[in-house]
Amino acid sequence: MNNLVIDMTHGGVKIAIGLAKKGKNVLAYDIYNTLNVIDRKMLDIYDVWLIEDLSELKTYKGEMRVIHPIHLPLTHDEIIENNPDLKYSFLTHHEIVRELLEDWGEDIPKIEITGVKGKTSSVFMLKEILIDENPLILSSLGALLYEDKKEIILKKDISIAPANIKETIDLAYKIANPICKIADGIVESENLRKYNSAIFESSLGVSGIGNVGLLTNISENYPIAKGRSNAAKAKKQVFNCRNVVCEKESFDEYYSDMNHPNVNTFSIDDESANMYVEAVDYTLDKTEITVCYNGVKTIDNDILKGKLTVYTFAPGVHHVKNVLGVILTCLTLKIDEDKIITGLANYKGITGRTTKRSNGNSIIIEEINPGINTDAIRQSVNMINDLDNWHIAIGGDYGITCEEIDEDKVADYLDTLETDIILTGDVGSSILSKISRKAEFIENIDEIYAQAANDGKNLLFIYRSDYRKLSQR
Image (cartoon, rainbow, N blue to C red):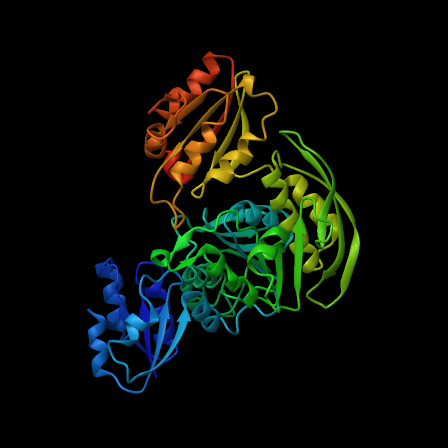
């Protein structure tokens, strides 16, 4: 059987080489023409045949397994028409990663996280709860390993494409099994492992290796694959996990037809969900949340019922929703409630997402996220009770994620606000031309912070960006 791996940009090189190492006959198609010299050489080393165009499929016979990203810009029919006589099967990059990792991590808790919002925050809340289990993590902030509560950066600049789950595992293996120590006899086994749990974030679905797949929400069902698919369809892959935790409203709208035996749902106020909020007391520092849960199906097929109160950094409704998904994931894994309470109490937000700090006498809340959209902006503004005491700055960069911001929708929302608005960045500049109300544009980000301090105002700064770029200012 031939295996055609499409898209070398989003992890295809790792997938192609992984298949070749297993003795498979592999072809690779660099659809975006981004393959660098080193990766091309690696494909040559492992006898992966690089095709220049799909018309080359005409020379092949028999079975052809096509492995593609979920957001493939081609239809299956467009691939098949190059050689209709082949016996085709199609797998996503997520699905092939599950195959490549078939025998990995059977004895440790594994969590896969997808959704439109809240993925990275959920990862790091779970990290705090599982910190004693030395978690291995892939998130939009990097591939990380925690040993004795100390962070080891495996790789900083790494995407949350599914192939990078395997890359993260491979990097952790190299840390635990350095060739020099094996050769010197210092390391007795070639299969040492430093982690006892794993948390993997993925943008458009999950591989299915998770004991629990957490779907945070479908807050905006944005289009993918040139409009032929959407976020909800891609993230449906979460139901390939043995147990699924999903926001109740998203489940009801997009997945009510799913026949999955182990789904637990959460909601702020829908008491028909497996978990809902009985009471919440919001503060900008530590929010008190009491949840009720009932009929929660665990990985051991137990059914749980109870009530739990936690205190954590969750200044807005959208943060509380993230907390609910995390608590329900932990209950599904049968993690002790005391660990959940302690872990969430230790969570203070994360640099590059929602953080709170002081600048002189001013409070600074930063909502910096590569997936900022209208709903996220609205929820962030709703955190602020007295808008007269605040400056609100909104802006950002383009081309951060698959989800592009709907500027017309943002402009319509901003027109409803009576408070002063500062716009910045390329996104802010474009929105400025679409709004009807008056707004100030400030290009230099440092000037925004300075203006808030000089005016004696607090600052809510909502910026659509990779924080690593912003932190270079």
